[in-house]
Image (cartoon, rainbow, N blue to C red):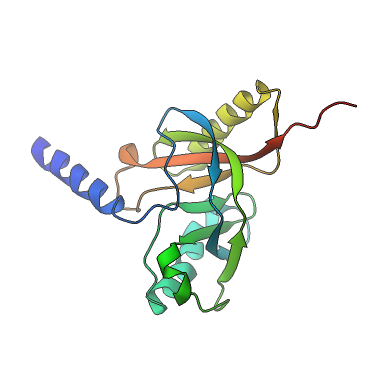
Amino acid sequence: MRWFTVVFALFTTSLAMAAPEAFPPTPAGQTEVKTLPAGVLLQSTGRGNYFDTADNLFSPLFRYISKHNIAMTSPVEARVESAAMFFWVGESERAKVAGNEAGVEVVRVPERRVVSRGERGGYSRANFEKARAVVVAWLATQPELEAAGEAYGVYWNAPFVPPFLKLFEVHVPVRPRAKAP
């Protein structure tokens, strides 16, 4: 039975990593400053927080990309407190985007600079909060940077990937700290 678990884990991980990536992931256990590319994202919003409404946020996005034959790109971004989920649209797929419809808004984002913490584990509020605490503590030690927005989740793997194999990140947008007069 042990060999089956290993084969299943490798198979599901390879399937989950098959989607084109919008940007490289931060390795688990590392904190880094990185620049995210400008892009086109599809947004679905709900009420409450992300962890209470994630299933309802996913469905409109999945219907949209299926209807317009848009390839899935990883990662999925999640605004936790404002219950929003974002799918990245790959450059080669952008001509297929048909505008806002049925609970999905097309959002164009500029290049962004973030502090990113990579972690492994299930996509839960507790794991998000632990990683956010690491990012906030790390950012407090960086005199040249300050937060420029709220922390959000970045999820790399499909739901069927076992939790111990899932990779996620917590991002905090940053900017240069204003110099004292």
